Length: 162
Image (cartoon, rainbow, N blue to C red):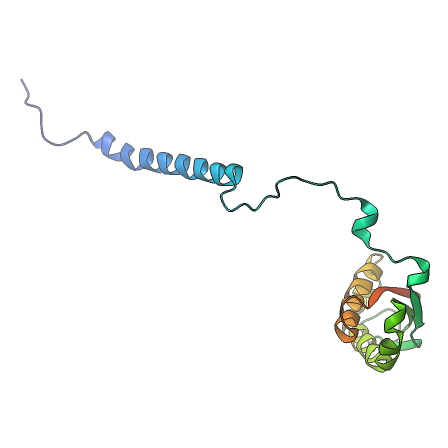
């Protein structure tokens, strides 16, 4: 008869790392589930209150707003564009108490708009959804110049490629 050897089965040696890996994956998944479900850092609010759409938008009433027209600009687009120039004009929707401050920095706003529109790729200007992106970018830059919560919106009144 053959004597049992002290060496273990080679198949058992190969299965050991697989079993350990499966156990560790299960423990990591269970720990992640417990962390999210039990919320040990109290990241989730106690009670979720419904948010009304009108409150989330934060639009001022008509008598809480003032409009400041910006001077029309003609921006050359360069040789890579199908159009030669962009005619652009806009109006700022601001809070009335900040009208004097906004009027004082109108030249900076005009410079920022001209510089930004010259830097934009001409192919982007020709895309249908470009106006939304440009408006959001310019409104963010105007808020940096004027200050936070002073400008509600940038109303683009003319955007013509010719």
